[in-house]
Length: 471
Image 1 (cartoon, rainbow, N blue to C red):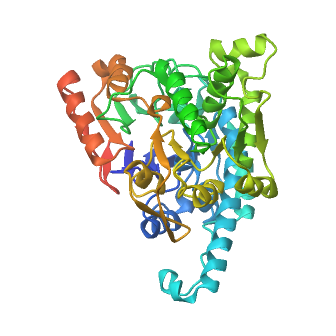
Image 2: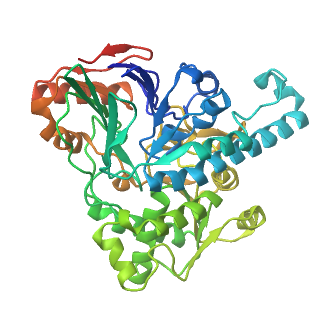
């Protein structure tokens, strides 16, 4: 077995790992790179692996930094299977279509502004921005998905198979365990995808894995310890209450998968308990509307607390003051609505979609609050807001950040350093080598050191394009 690392090396986006085993080439994930626009554009358009040489793809979960470049692979000629869990397939049906739609609309918006302001042409070399892929490319991708439930062995060829386990990160997220058996020899490789946390709302806790010799593990929070998630409701209520006292709006960039549903459930609880004012709450994202339906369709993924809502006859993702918005016209009307109210909108890193329009209309008003609820990758607009930049670009226009920027890190769906170390503990006695991916250099280096101290394992931080033989 040979593995080559092409994505999420030294960064948190663009997950893509190339495994050659049993005479086949298998891709673990095929995600979009997000960050510096020009660099991300180059990586996304020019896949490092020829599509014709790929036998199959195994997808860990539906987040776009793991799934979002599958249509480019198909556009390049791939026609093989994409194996993943049933819930992930349902999520990708909505998410990949939404990504293609947003790319087309954002390109249309930017091109229209460029034509009106010729002096800005040099930013795009005078050429129109082209979407990475089209809706037609997505529609060719979706039939390739094949469902593989948790704990169900899937044979890839005579020598290679895999099964997946619950990663506890988002609905349908999985840890992949590959098995190669050749000439009486066995090699087992686990790919963590993104590892979740215990006791978070909605989905079940991460599974423990069977023994493996090699582990590819994420390191998003490899140098951090999360705060107690039990305090999140009080913190969220405080942010909403003080913004309401100013008469402001609470603008919440949130991932449409997972984070939006967590926030809706928390707001439901706070409303039931009378801990926040009686104000309108909007989920302004067609994708979030579709994704929330997928959540309702997969109660088998829920934890006991969320299932209790269903047993009590309640919809955990719906209550009286909450309104889901799909139509553009209804979204635009929010610009003229006086506060206070809450708007949850995608994308979670403020890189595309309706959240950019909400930021454009609300960043410069000191009464408002921008509530950041998840990890913000380096060089994204969300990261600039977290880092308290006084001025940020939105659609190429500089805006002064006068609104309050608040953070709610307690809902992170990524395990922290201690949680990652505890999760891998049962594997440690059997491991020959650990590869750390999906983390910025400072996070990955810190986790490498911690693994060395705690388990005395060889831990490697691979570079982009670096290959390793697994024996």
